[in-house]
Amino acid sequence: MEPLSSSNETIAKPSHLNWITGYGWMLAVSFVLAQPFHHLFELPILLMALLGLWLLLSHTRNVWAMPAVKPLLIVFACIWLPMLFSLTDAVNLSRSAQTTLVFLRYPLAGIFLIYALQDAISRKRLLRTTGVAISLGVLVMVILAITGHAYEGRVMGIPFPIAQLLGALSPILFFWVLSEAQRKRWMWLILPLASSAMLFSGSRSSWIMFAVAFFLFLAQLLFLEKSILNWKSGLVALLLLGIGVSFAIHAPTMKERIAQTAGLFSGNYAKANAATSLRLPIWTVAVHVAKDHWINGVGPRGFRYIYSQYVPKDDYWIAQTMTDKSGKVIHPGLGPNHPHQFLLEVAAETGVIGLLGYLIALIYWGRLAIQAIHKKTYDALAWMAAAFVAVMPINAHMALYASFWSCLVWWLVATALAYWQAGQRST
Image (cartoon, helix red, strand yellow):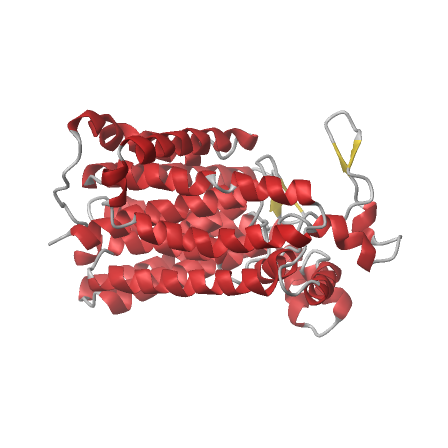
């Protein structure tokens, strides 16, 4: 079965850096393992950025010789340069400048990841460990749901963003299950658990990511490497995911959530607003902000500081002030942190310049995926699909410029390029 093949290329590397190519994958996977622990995930990113800076300064020639470095910098420039241009009209220059400056850690961390994952064995270990970590998250969510730890269709007891994390990483889970199921048939059982966990999460944005991820996975199985075994695997995966969905939708806690979601297609504003978790007014404001600041926006993370200018004083979201652990009000009178829709976030905060950069990055990413297809680097496609799912235009969950999601996105981008690089170097 060919889709699981990966290149075993020979790469000339300085021998004194073998510790990076031999053990760097552990630092890479620590980013995933740290996700449930508040902001701890930023520590691995910081360490990778520092090591990437050291590699860039001390082994410049080796860094630039890696095929994946150029694509990394191109994609980063498409997103970061519009952020830089937006600073001239930022409504909160300090906040926007801080966000823009902090983004510089991502290409440095990416350089480390690309260098550390040059060996096939390191990439295999990263895939296996990431797959196990995702599976454990899935198992915990299902156990919490079936033991009654759910409220209004959401699993309680775990950090809310974990659902989005599992949704974004699902292409990697699918590929890992497929690769392991060739030897261990019981691994297929992870798929119904995964689809159940997604529904139990109650996160509609995660449902969408999961569905898109599975569609891409199925397309890879059925059309890229046509074989009877792949068709059978695709049908098995579809059947098992369907079983998981069927189990979840019959749970009492899910019925109300699904009924509420159906209101999105009712044609009724109130029902549609409820189905989007009251986001329609936020999207309306984002459209107005984007029109008024159409060239370069109001600056990254600036939406919250201008939101109040477009709504009445009794606006629902203005009233939802944030508090710290002691109950002290944080940022009173500010609106939502972001527009809760990627295209609107980019349009409002970095303007047309940002939209062009974002769309160019997506198109370029598609071109890189086509190159991976031509090289039959199918393990790279799983990671590339995950990066796409995390940043696709229809997303309406976390903020693209915020720390949590931007760390995940750039970790996926750099890791995907490390796998993509293996195919480019194969003979």
